[in-house]
Length: 277
Ligand code: PAF
Image (tube, rainbow, N blue to C red; front, side, top):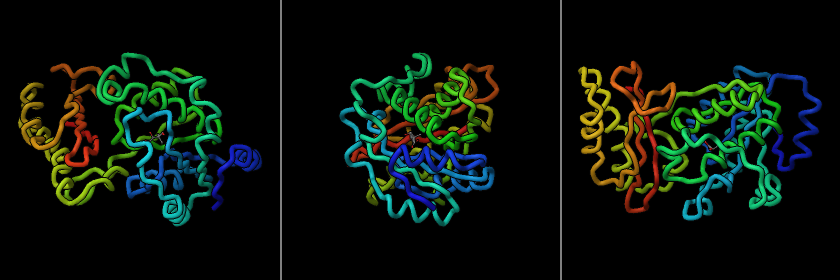
């Protein structure tokens, strides 16, 4: 396995391989959720590239860009064990000469004026931009994204369609701890007391799903019941959308996806989770 930091070196290597390429874009601090994406790529492609890049353009000014965990050595070891061919880990100034004068890929307002897009202005422009760059650089045929970032996945699928990227997007299911906590690199910010609170996200989703299975279809009832379980966390949003359109769920929509974002005191770690009801 090669670890590549420079764009020109990546281009040189890719020029000489004539294989189907799978890309797993990550920000590092890899966990078993990432491992499931990587395994799928290794299975489905002849060559797998994992990008590890904490993308400054997708972080807001008061967000955790500086303190985001950076564990390249450990990540590279995991990638090697899983059969990855290239880890692409560029520095910020290798990817962007000037972030202030950057051509951005901007998803439509209707896709970003809600959920994480509403609380994190500019976030999805940053994501769409870096993912476009990574698609162009990696020449991948398939790219793998976790369903935990459901809005991100929706936006990337739309971007691929709208901009005619020749890339197949492969969604991968959320991986959870035994107690239900969705795996996230940001879980490393949690101590024991906040971890208990973090668990409330999956508990709330499971409870709403139970109610749904009992036939309850009233949006307010479903959200209010989940909200009660989230007491002790700082809820950013709790919403139900149609997973195909990401529009507000309507009572005659067959499928419903509940999404939650909450900050977990005392560290104010912002976690997201979602579940199809
Ligand atoms: O989901 C992530 O880790 C990031 O948003 C991504 C897709 C790697 C882009 O920086």
